Length: 141
Image (cartoon, rainbow, N blue to C red; front, side, top):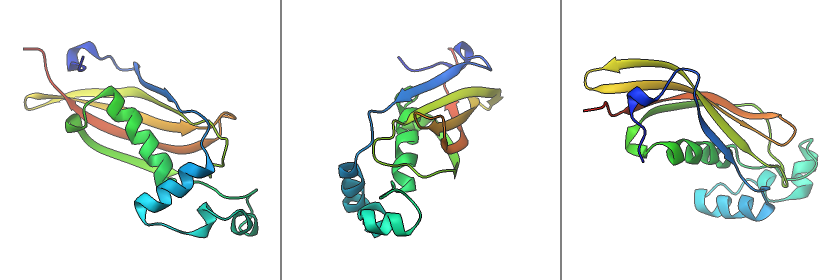
């Protein structure tokens, strides 16, 4: 059931998605899908040379997980904008949790706009992405 503007309150947690541990295979698949074959994401030696324990995820892979969490809550046609800042590297085995909370509500024309936080963290609560998004939700008829 699609969310309705009047049913949402400031302070509501509207997103809570936990993904299974991320894998090196996902990094390689994402490289193929995106065309980004930077060896930092596929070669452990390159990752170690860059100061990590091995390979790290593409930032946009984690952004995609965050966007999935948003569109699991609302249909993508309701999404007006999404903005994030990349905060930390994601390694194989990390469990990514995405959360979002309503921070503001307003009416614009015939749409109810909700503004929400967006954050992706790992199992150690290290922030990978922080940001916000806005959605234009339908009003009750």
